[in-house]
Length: 433
Image (cartoon, rainbow, N blue to C red):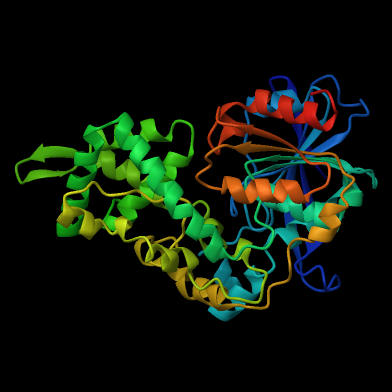
């Protein structure tokens, strides 16, 4: 039986659904998918249309709100909202280093996780929709990877959608992971140089940390092995609205003076561990390149291979040349599975997924060109996580899609400016703007 409870202004109901692991074998193994239903207090019996939220990632459960926080308050004005924990995340049959050994060895784990991409998530949505709405179409709100899922939804099951709202998540339809990361490294460089322009002293501070890490090879309190490359990956912060400020505050107090000399401060190490560890979302790392795979080619650790074509990201070379190190972000690389204790047991599983070639196509350009579902997408002008040019090319492919291209927000615009962003997209799909 579903359990309901209240937060200020909201009535919440926890719901659990049984879905096939492999939708191509509906009589086979089943897994559980969790979702949280949200409705404005006092409107429980109103016949509100449904909006299902698909979190960014991959690998993250749906956002946990308190009351009508952020964009949820705006959505609840005219929708009943379903916050979906995509399969393997949150409370949906979690997949991580603790649970995956139940499947067997790395080969069995990789075969299992091959069913955790956008295509399976959308088929979960369709199975759940039949139960939740009685078959009526609903609106999907897809943030980042959730937008990839929404684009797949439009390609394969548009009859299930009343509208699609996408924020920072229009994917390349036919680009290989190599194309994605070949375009990503120049953005990472721009974001780093913009950070150093804003905080000039951070260039020297970052170089000092790289030099210290290269010499001492510290292990962080949670067991994460901090290398120069791992330190550089703190650049993932630079894709968010307040990320440059957060990185600056990290760097300004990186060192503390002790009887043994200057060392990385405990506060710095704890903060870095929290940012770099994938303990809470291992599927982000394991499936990160798999979300682009569809052309019969292996992803083969694309981000790491493409990095070799950008020697300016070599931290050792930067030290030798006297130039500040560049930060990286939104790029999962194989060495992370050596550094992060939450990922080490999954290294061979990730290798097998990186070698895999039997991925089904994710998008149907012909069907998207004939689209009849109202669609609106927020495209962030210099999004570090999702290439703007790739997004705009896809936007031109989807018939009727209306874009809002803005430099007001970074990739986390739905979090930072939620009510405004959602209001804008709803106005676009309703023809009010």
